[in-house]
Image (cartoon, rainbow, N blue to C red; front, side):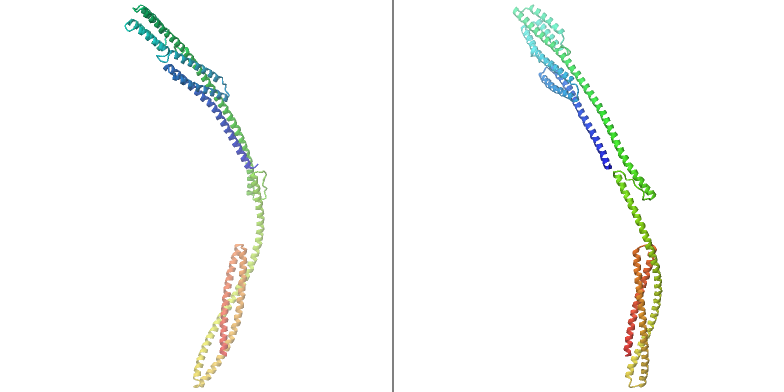
Amino acid sequence: MLIKRKLMLNTTISVVAMLFMLWLLTFTISSLENNIQVARHIGKIESHVLQLRRHEKDFIARKDMAYVDKYQDTTQKLKAEVDALALGFQKVGLDSAETTAMQSVLASYEQAFTELANTQQVIGLHPKDGLYGSLRSAVHDVETLIGKDDYQLLSGMLQLRRNEKDFMLRLDEKYVTRLQNNTAKLVEAVRASGFDEDKKSNIVTLLNSYQSAFLNLVNEQRKLGLTPDQGIQGEMRATIHRVDEILARLITISSDEVAQYTSFVERLAFIAFFIILVVAIGFASYIAKSVLISIRRLQTSMLAISQSNDLTIEIDASGNDELSEMAKVFETMVQNFRNLIVEVNQSVTTLNDATQQVANNISVTNQGVASQIQETDMVATAVTEMVATVDEIANNTQEAAHKAELTNENASQGKQGVDHTKGQISALSENLADSEQIVQELAKDSETIGSVLDVIRGIAEQTNLLALNAAIAMAIKEQSAVATEVNKHVVLIRDVAEQSGQMAQQNEQMSHELSEQAHKLQLEVNRFTV
């Protein structure tokens, strides 16, 4: 398997593991969200229960029907929260018996509060309403019939009112007994008073009505509850305590469920992480081992080749991954190096043969250069002699020219004085004969100079030919570009060839000039002879 595929598979395993952990985290968060929703519902239920208690206390304290309406609204919200809690319990797989009990208890609590509100309405929401209003009306009727003059009866009536108020404030049964006793006393006092019988009868009837209204108030108050633990209030208190107990159990159940689920998720996460870790480490170890084996195998082959310089060592390229491909490429490179070294050895052998041949050619060239140097020395000697001869010819020519000039002058003078002196003509004839002999000798010398110039021209042409051969040999040696010693000899040959060429050119130029001067001299001699 290719390393690339191994790494891709390792990456895939890592991605799958991360996706699984992400799914586990999402599942955990989702499940915890349900538990959190359950806890929120429980918290809201607890808050709404406290609101119900508050509305209850406010209604009892202020006796305002607005709190009954608030109680009803809060009750509806509480029922909705209980229903949502029951649904949440179903989602998390919990028993909904407690929520059912909660619904039942809340229904009882609502019924008790409704009965309390109705009872309170019977008793009276303010002093002029219900039984409170009946008592107030009865008291006013009695006070009106008694009038303001009988202070004893008014005092008894005020005592009844005091007992009434004490009961309303303290809700104590003893004030009922006191009111009954004081009512009986007040009836006796009325009967013993100086009022007429009809008035007495009316006052007694009104007192009995007042007492009956008060007793009805007491009965309703007893029904409502003289203390928070009695009557409807006691029933509501017990009901709300049951609600608190159910809430406590719901909170405990929710907390236990959250704890159990958290523990389960933690165990599942640890198990999944351990499995994923083992798989990842195992596969990573497999990849590392396979890669390291191929690397070490290739490293061993490279180290053996580098230490022994043996390119014939076989390289293990087994496998089908990138390192095996690398080993195959390295093996191909070693084979190419091996072939290249064989070709280099062949080239070195050929170069040695060429070097030997070049050395032989250099030896022959050195001999040719030595011969050329000797010939050049001979040419130089001949040129020196030729220069001396030319100088002598030039001097003779100058002297002949001077003599010719003198002869010409003498001839001119002789022509002018030919008629005067014959002796001078005879002398001139002798001089002319001598001049003719000298001119003939000069003509012979000129021919000798021409033959010498031909020899010099032949030597110059041979010298140019040698210089050309040396230049060709030099170019051949420069193209071979072999050993340093060969280059030194080639440079020496080049210098000798250049010097020989320069000397040949100078010789040819001097020969050409001498030839021209000799030709001119022959022309002058011929002209003079004629």
